[in-house]
Length: 187
Image 1 (tube, rainbow, N blue to C red):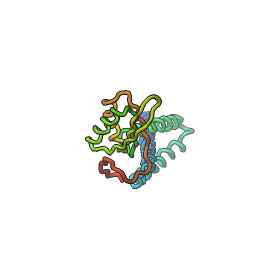
Image 2 (tube, rainbow, N blue to C red):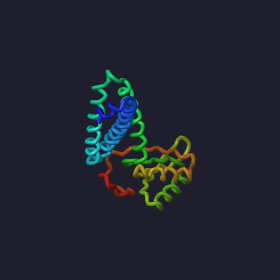
Image 3 (cartoon, one colour):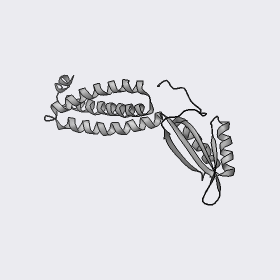
Image 4 (tube, rainbow, N blue to C red):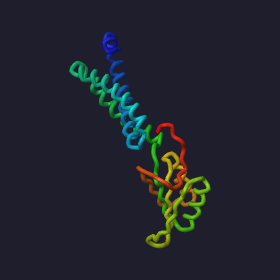
């Protein structure tokens, strides 16, 4: 394939540079997603992505390394594709929203009870804890949710109390309790 492109003259070289750039974006995006999937426990899909990633890497890297002394633009396209791939991979991961979060909210006792009721009415399991703040009594609410559903929780909290303190944490292992889950085909 590479020889056919180079046989096309200047347009072939431009096309080869574009292929290197785009293929590197795809490869690194896949690699970024693969790492996230491994951490989140989606091993089967991660293995498939690893296979695709390494095939792309072998073909792209060999072309760039073998011809770098002839055409430095291959190396530049490779580097720019790598950077763009990291960026796109992180955006895609954010959109896919893999994994679970713990959403913790600290608010007044009165608003805390109202928030807990609303979230429970929407199907979320809410654990409440009485707490002492710097000035007055507070209510701490903890909700475990899919990352995809966390925005709904945050919006509901802010609708009732725009001054609520909200903290989210990624959850590695979770066992027991009540969690509003959606079926996943990826695990």
